[in-house]
Length: 414
Image (cartoon, rainbow, N blue to C red; front, top):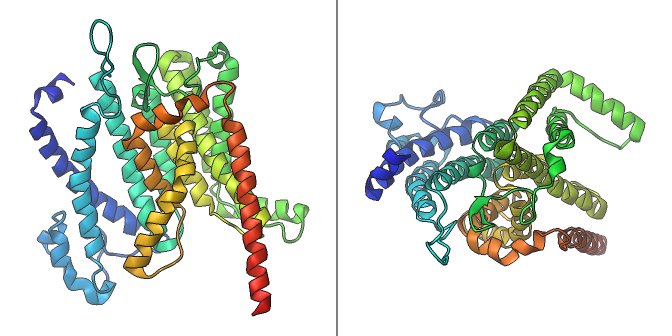
């Protein structure tokens, strides 16, 4: 850490710009290679049969897309503009995020009677690492969601596991909160204290239960209740067996449970960080799942995809359940911005849910100090957060039901 801090800020930012270019190239590969309908657009993929031979300059981040524009007859006019912009934004965004976090914008200096209180430099750099990984994952998921209206497990599953390992190893990578005259990681009990029972066997069972539950719901399977509950359950388990991935997820559940037990045995901040990430996983996923249920009851059709559930669960691992709730309530404003931009640029009026969850998450990360300062006390023990969530879901159900009735009336009139 001292060697990094010894470098001038300009040198660090220049190095991160180069890293950002490489990560932008990796993101472009993932956007096209991990999609359900893979397209050979990235230079790191096998070229299309009708594409002209690749040249060495095509592999250069950013500038290579200018040469790849010759493949427009294969991929469509202007196909290269978006990946070029992703390379450019990555090269600018990574050093900009580092400067923002390293210069204490997420954890500003606090005046004290004797000396000012600062967040430790290792904490700031671990947060930057965590947020860079999360934003990169959200970037890939966002553009796949734009293209296909789906978020693949190939992003959310490894992204979730990576986040759990990172937070368990370095709990300071969680968002910072000022508490007890020091900057500390945001725990799932913040701003309250940490109950003793979470450090004993009951806390371990909670962590294992959340991880095992996540593994079970990640098993590929199809469900339908069109022929009743009994047939629906039979169809669900039959499709699960047909996919032949159930044993892999059960093995992962066993390995993850052993890992939970190991971190619990170490205890201290590592266990508290891991349990916070697991509760964030559950909180983020259940929040969107609740919206799916409300949407089904109100509209009689699926309002959100399961990929949105796993996507929000992944965000919860890195940020925690409290930021997930804030993100969810900020997402309508992000949706307005994203949908208007999409309509202006493409003329499309449909909108995926993932991109504006991602945009709201980026805002919460960047403006975290002010966001938590404004709403942090809502999450204190005895606060009104559960009531707000319940009221919000009921209000959403009422509005969606009203929309369905209005839509049916207009349809029958026509």
